[in-house]
Length: 230
Image (cartoon, rainbow, N blue to C red; front, side, top):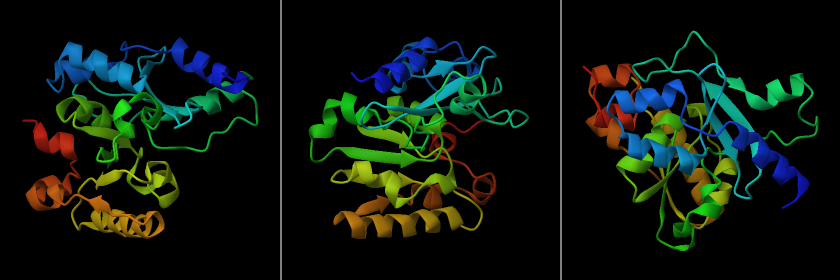
């Protein structure tokens, strides 16, 4: 293990655990059981900040730590929009704890599973890509037949970020919106990736077909569809 990889491992292991507002809210709102949450947290190497935020570590297909997004969630398991996400690389650099040449090019959340999950060696493995890290974490236990990755935002998807998945069955699950623009944007990216990879990249129309007008206005995702809140 080279020095950079060892340093990255040290960084995420220091904050590893389920002591975040996010993990507590996932369980208390009935998305996952405590046991499922523990498995999902271990799978995605979730961390916890000192002030209760969840750390979604971005670790690439070579097991190299790129960055970590610190996010805060309310007790209802929705984002606390009064607290903006913070990147760990920024904070560590600010305090002189990270080299200035550290590679912080962002990758898909969960990409380290290429090394860890034995299913990656299977030609017919299904790789599902969603927008939110929260969705990937929860869906990994709800639909374990897929390997779930997340872009971290609807505008964070591009062909380059999908490149490590080349050769696998890729299915994109964009969030919905009022006019279907996100679906069309992701469809265009899927078409471009299909041309580059030489095999189809699929975009699921599940949300576009099943979401109500009110749900589309609320820009729901798969978790919202499967676990409608009162």
